[in-house]
Length: 315
Image 1 (spheres, rainbow, N blue to C red):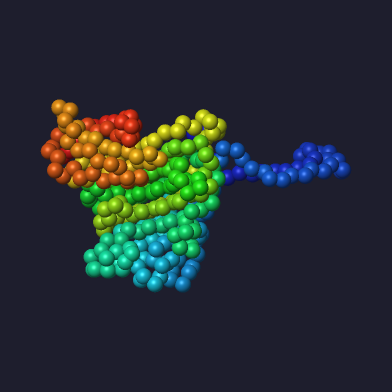
Image 2: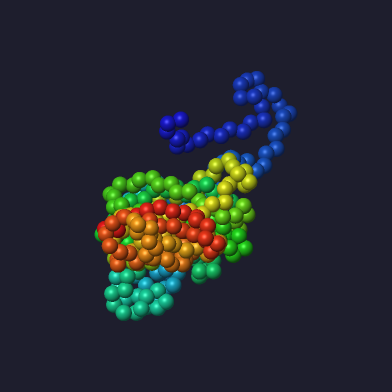
C-alpha cells in the first residue's frame, strides 16, 4: 500500500449482513485492540490544550512558564494553527531575558530554551510518566529555524526507565532550518531486556548544553512505532552519535550506557591527543584547540573494550 489509510470503518454483527437474518443469535465482545500499533502517549498530535491560570499548555504536557509561574519565566511554548495535520501544533522558541535561578542567573541576557515535557503537571516528580512498552522508534513531523552556530540544534529526547534506571532512549536532533514540515524517524536503543515502567519525554528549542537565542521549533504528530519482535530478539546495544561533523568549536557525543565510558581522539599518525571520561546522555568535548584536519576517535568502556569508533574533520 503506497498511501496509508486516513479512516476506518468497523462493523460488529451477530448475524449475517445479507438477508435473511435470523433472531436468537448472541455475541459478547470485550477488549478489542490492534497488534503492532503505536501505544499512545497523551496528545502527541497537540490537538488538545488546557487553560491554566498563567496560560495554555498542551493537555498532558507542561511548560516551565506555566507550571512554575512564581519564577515569572518568559512564555516560549505556544499553540499554533500552523500544523502538519489537524487544527493545532506546538511551537517552541529560544530567547534571551532575565531568567531567575534555578533556570538562569537572574542577570539580563540569559538564554532560555522553549522546553515542553510530558506530564510536567505536578512538578518534575510527575514527569516520569507510567509506561510499560518497548517501542521500536519515535516518529513525528517538525520544521523551524536553527540559529547559525555549529553547536546549535533543535532536540527531542525520550528516556525509558525501569525501577529508576534508564534502559532505553531515542534522540532526534536537527540543525536544518525549513519552512515546511518533514517526517523524522529515530530508533530506540535498549541496554536491557527489561520492560520499562516509566518514560520521560522532552522537547527543546535548542541545545540544552549550549543554549543560544533565535531557534524556532514546530512539532506535530508524534507517535511511537512498534515492530513485532520478541523481547529476546531485541539486541542489547549502545548507540553513539557524534555531532557536528565537520566540527569547529565543540564536539557533542550523544550516548547512553550503564557503564563508564571514555573517548580517545587520535591524529592521523596515531598519537593520542585527547582522552576524557564521558557523561551519560551528552558529552561536549572542546575541539577549538585542534588543528584543522582529519581525526579519529574511539569510545571505550573501563575494561578497554572499543564500543564505537569513527572519524571527524576539524575545520
